[in-house]
Length: 605
Image (cartoon, rainbow, N blue to C red; front, side, top):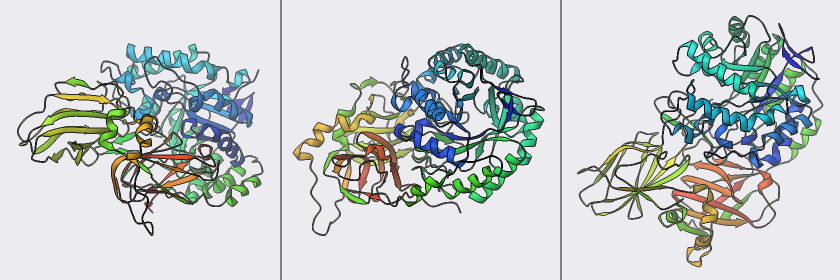
């Protein structure tokens, strides 16, 4: 029977010392039809292992639901890893961070404020037990001890950086998780990971669990920190940060390939094992991106390219080749000549697409409601509405002398309409919590967007929506109707309206004159190269969501840094493709463009 063990100095695979050279590849950020391609390229770079997080809320979007099909088929992903001759590391949380919505913790669970977030609390532990029971059997049957690829499983994630519970309580929580993991048949080594910091490594682990560290530079020094925390056993950097994530409104982060390669060389030369974070970043499709808040709320961008060795569209970068050269100094790497075809495949299809139908935003909202609006005497949170992501609507009446609208806080952004006319925006990121109102009585609508639940730090688990009282110049507004929207289903729900002749947009004039348009849901059809990756560019559009053939690509925003959205080739057919945009404000021209290459924005260099 195959074995994988923690030896006095090395990882031991079937008793032989083994250096794990792994790369992070998140199945949930890659189209399933592209999993095999990304895994194959990992082997060609010289990796022997693939690591993935598992986001609990991706598989359990609602209470009582657990989905392992399609995009969520972790078993199929691990089978593809095995078919490529690679091993796997699985990191199921319950908390993962990963710049993912809520760090992977289900909002529906934390809506109960009595639940103890990331601590030894009965309701939290009971929910984790049910999660593990739904997920871990498929991991157990794919362990290396049963002929599968899985070498190790992580317990929690960077726990040393969270909270202020005393160490005995923290260890009690971690032991409960480890016991629940073992109860599901996991017999391969369990490990923790924390930043290469003496205090965090001490607070985030257990003596009986293998410790790993996270860092992106000064490898020799950081390994010494890890060795102080763990006097024996193999040294491993579980997240070697070879890039960084992007947030809306900031620059596109890059890390020099030469520096990354040199630090990787130092790490491997010291005998350490490694997991590149990321090998391939992928995309925050749909409404899955998280956010950070360290005084300023910053939602994560749709692209998760991460300046990784394998770009968002699967193209090997200069960093890929630099790291492959380093890895080749320490272990045999396969021939990668076949990747010359990737470099030679040329530009993506280039075409302009005219949006031919529009339903104004205010007219679209009633068709998108999940159910009838409910009445409240104050503004509910989205948790009160059982809405765990996306958009919600709040409605009330205003008077002619109200004049100004103020809210204590909005999480995260609200488009303000009076009688279907857009009059302003309330925005958490810029601390804009006041909007001037017209001097007339009318219907007030707040279209509130959850831009991603905080994925790191003490604000994990906080509710969304309009927080606290909403006031005008003369009074507190205490009569509301509110409800959640089925925003992800917008193309289908509004198809009859988009098909109506009255919704047709004027065709472009002579010379292709611009056609400015207001907020709404837009549709276009187009023909292109079937199976080819595309890059959607929306210059002149402001903020919203984009779908291609029913797949929600994610958010776009003129704030940047990214100027394009990645469209995976498997979504495209030769004829009759559909592009749908939900634009929250308006566009200079009712036209979208598919361009030859991605544009991830200006860099900090």
